[in-house]
Structure formats: structure tokens, C-alpha cells
Image (cartoon, rainbow, N blue to C red; front, side, top):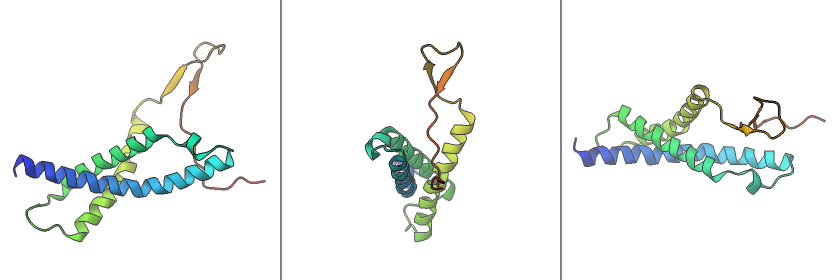
Length: 136
């Protein structure tokens, strides 16, 4: 395969992976909106554009890696099942990559808090989204 063939394959996989990840994003935005309302925040205060961009980039990478595993020939027609497979790879693959990064990279922390005991750091871990409504 030529270099342009490889680039086309990676772009196809990346774009379909990004689309699959965008499906996950829609669900995440709904959860974020619900959580912001429960906490008395506006959606804009809770929303992070950089997190969205990173999430879509991860979907692109997952799709690009996925298309390599399918061994498609772009000179022939691409079947619907391959498109659906790449969408699924973007959806599930991004979840896998994000989980791997969270587990294997050190947690992000902020600098020492003023007035805090030595060695105490503030956690900058994202807020946990709870699917259950608050009780009481």
C-alpha cells in the first residue's frame, strides 16, 4: 500500500472513531448538565472545552488504531459492517484508552495549599458523576 493509502485509511478510521466518541459525549453532556443543576451551577461553569477536545482526540486515535486491525482495502468498497465496527471502536476504544490512562498515569494534583500541613495537596480529580438522584 502506498503512503497516501495509509493516510486515507488512518483518516477514515480516525474520523469514524471520533464520531463514535461523539456518541459517548452526548450521554456525558446530559449527565454533566444534570449534575450541574443538582449542584446549582450553570452548564457553562461545569463544562470543560479542553476535556471535550481531548475526548474527541482519544476517539480519533482509537479509530485510527482500529482501522489498522481491520486490514481494509480502500480500493474496494467499504462495507456497512466495517463502518459500524469503526464507530464501535471509537466508542469503546476511547473508554479503554481513558481507563488505561487513569489507571497508569499519576493523578494530577495542584500545588500545596496555603496554610495546609506540609505534604497536603488538593486533589484536582474530576467530580464523580452519580447516576442516582440524591435521596432525601
